[in-house]
Length: 475
Image (cartoon, rainbow, N blue to C red; front, side, top):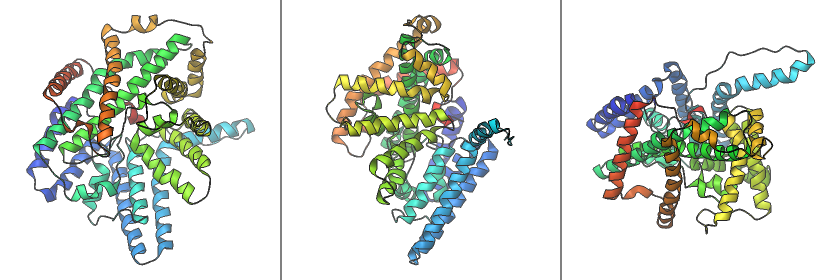
């Protein structure tokens, strides 16, 4: 079940909210767990067992670690933490990387004449990369004394299973949401703001991202793209990914607000970046924060390596987290090298610093050179796109895009560019006045009118076309 499906919009969500608001406060965590389990099991009921198992595993390890720490036995607490994290990563590693590992071993041993075993194709459970990270952060924070374990399994299960962010984030920290699980404010104003935020994300996904998809399909389907086509195509696919993923995040945050929760923001206008380091600090913020706090900083504090080495390993891991292929490893490697060069050459820019158009365009050009590895997940395919980007296949034109796509697609491409420019100005005002908050705290009458119009148009489009899954579901 996904947010942009009729079954979610017209059956699941109304039924869930009705039950949620009818029961008393003490029962709402149970409603969240039950509703989230139904939401998750709609796709594959068998994977719900894995999901519940990981929840129980980390719930009990959290209690055991806390008990040992209170008893002054930090050594045993650390051993328990190690076992808990290994169990989490083992589950993630098997489902996400086992096939890849077997293929790599087979390719290495084949020239030696050694036959290896093969695995049946392992299906990747939806959201496992996200809910495993949340589970790991829970037991690590308990060990660090940054969070207190919950005594009620239903509260922990609600934290892991919250359906708005279950499949693709934002990645939640238990230390930032535990008080909200115990007590949170419900109001008509907050519900209305949440509904507006949900509609905004819905418009981003259905009207813009899905409209750009045909253009992205053209470039990703080209065997020998030419210069102009390759650069334009990569930019369009980047726009599609941004509106797709930020649209999901907006919907998740909006649904959370409708339930009284305040989730962390996940985007800060990344396409206005002026360096790759700044892009990383603006895109998928909760993942960046997770890797900083649980990978990068521990490496530095333990003195296992210097800041440059820690950054290199962190970015390499971020690439591998996105997918089990050498292309994603190359994606992380390129990010690592470029960010290290920016540090060495003093080219790192800060979020909220003075805007320079030429630096923005240069950063986007570098980003587009890296992204073929991400978009294709295949090194050979990515290198063919790179050949086109460097003009090795000729100059080309944009005829293929505009002859094979509708005028509506072209119109929404323009809308996407205007959106980014306008949202950038709104974003600057928001971050200037709020350190922690939500830019949509006040919605004017005109804004609501436009939102409702866009939402209505999106519903019409959804009725006329089959829905498409969110791109980040594959991670």
